Image (cartoon, rainbow, N blue to C red; front, side, top):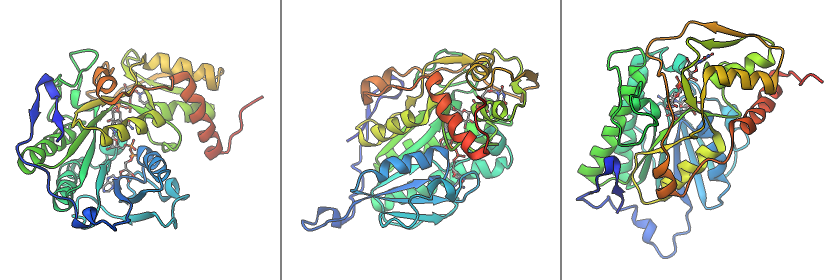
Length: 346
Ligand SMILES: NC(=O)c1ccc[n+]([C@@H]2O[C@H](COP(=O)([O-])OP(=O)(O)OC[C@H]3O[C@@H](n4cnc5c(N)ncnc54)[C@H](O)[C@@H]3O)[C@@H](O)[C@H]2O)c1
Ligand SMILES: O=C(O)[C@H]1O[C@H](OP(=O)(O)OP(=O)(O)OC[C@H]2O[C@@H](n3ccc(=O)[nH]c3=O)[C@H](O)[C@@H]2O)[C@H](O)[C@@H](O)[C@@H]1O
């Protein structure tokens, strides 16, 4: 049975998880592990699907409403006998039979999650409730991709999982960060009340190929701007920090968490910390030394600093990121140049 080591405490559930399908115990049962990935047409989800599909014993089902994701991200798997794609909004119940659920469905870029905040809350709360209901009915293990935004504008730095955060409950980012906090609460309540096997990853800023070109997040913005010879828009004051994790490291961490014995929450992120001005200078140096850096207005409640304490991920999952920002940015540049049809200048 999984243990919860959040906040240094050691809690164990009182109830055993529901039994998986009786077929699982059949001597002649030859089926694969059936894995649902909600939000699997998105950036992290599609990379996770690629990794899961490498294992021939996995059958992968993606449920996505294509709000920020695209079938294009999954085109190499469409038609594959171990792959299935369902157009589905997680705010509606889903009745299927699965063994594991990676629950990623939720717009992640601030410009997209603020576009329809009520829908973002519904996705986080009702969507997570529906996926927990599914996990309960079929006895599946469920992993939630929560976020470093649960720490809000953190007063503790770097952020350990035991930190409860500093979050504005009524701000323009609340639909996302409070939504994810409720999603975490629901996960633990289903775990304690119904014995569901849960895993919670607190993801810190992740970047890599396949991010939407006009996604609005800082790494994709700067790379697209550098390639298009447009000024890099650093939002004021420019001294705010983030820690950027390359997507293959993230996928590795998520799979280790799902397969391991710990519920989390566990921070998964790269502790390398950069100011937004440093990030802009690095993109300029690596991608387009001629490009201008322009200071622009920021949006409300932007966290001033963010860096994961990954002691738990190291100790409990044997995980730490391998790809440094300077090595990851050129991999993303290549993908963006290909999609934008702009070759590197000689
Ligand atoms: N990328 C990051 O830096 C980061 C950081 C912290 C947490 N996360 C979390 O990881 C997950 C994936 O993030 P991402 O960067 O791949 O974002 P993304 O926007 O590329 O992917 C999200 C996917 O969810 C789908 N989706 C949104 N609402 C849905 C709904 N109601 N029903 C079904 N599908 C829906 C979208 O169409 C998209 O395919 C999200 O839960 C996000 O909160 C990401
Ligand atoms: O990692 C996380 O937990 C969260 O990180 C991001 O949220 P945020 O860090 O605000 O992401 P960005 O929009 O990429 O902004 C990062 C920083 O870059 C700055 N920025 C953004 C865009 C830009 O063009 N220029 C710029 O300087 C912002 O002001 C901010 O300080 C994600 O978008 C969330 O989904 C995720 O949950």
